[in-house]
Amino acid sequence: MYKKILVPLGGSELAKKALEHAEELAKTYGAQIILLQIVPLISSVAPPDLVAPFINDEMLKEVAQTNLTKLAEEMKIRGHKVTAIVRTSRQVALEIIDFAKKNGVDLIIMFTHGRSGITRWVLGSVAQEVLTRAETPTLLVHLKR
Image (cartoon, rainbow, N blue to C red; front, side):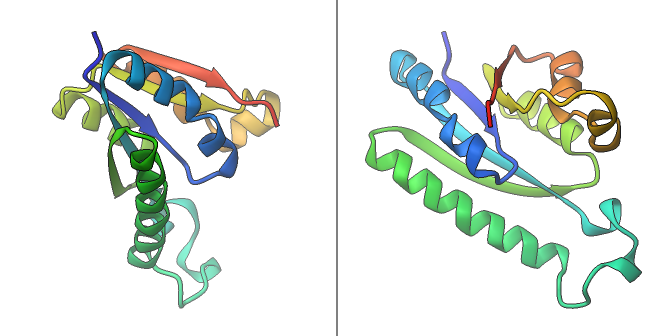
C-alpha cells in the first residue's frame, strides 16, 4: 500500500521523537522513509538588517543536512530504508506538496503542535496548508509537549 512515506521535519526534537509513527508504518509496509526538511530562506522570515551578517541560507542548509543525515543513519541502524533531503524555500508548505507530487510519495506524515489563536495566526500552519492542498494522503500526528 505505501512504498514511499514522506516525513517533513522542522528540526525540533519533539518532531523527531514522534517518528515512531512513520517507522511503524514503514516496517509494516516495507516502505522507504523520506525525511525532508525545508529551511525557510532567511530573507523570507526576517529583514536583512535584523539577521546577523554571519548567518546565511547556505549555512542553515548545511546544519540541517548534517542533523537530518545523522537522524537517517540512526534509523538505518534500526533497519529502515531512509533518505534525508534538505531544501530551501520561501514557501515551506508548497515545497512539501510539490516534492510529494514529483517524487511519487504515497503518504505524508506530519507532526503538528496544534497551536491556536494568536500563535497560529502569527506562525501560520504548514501542516494545515499541506493537509488542505496536497493531493497526497496526509496523516497529522498531534505532538504533546
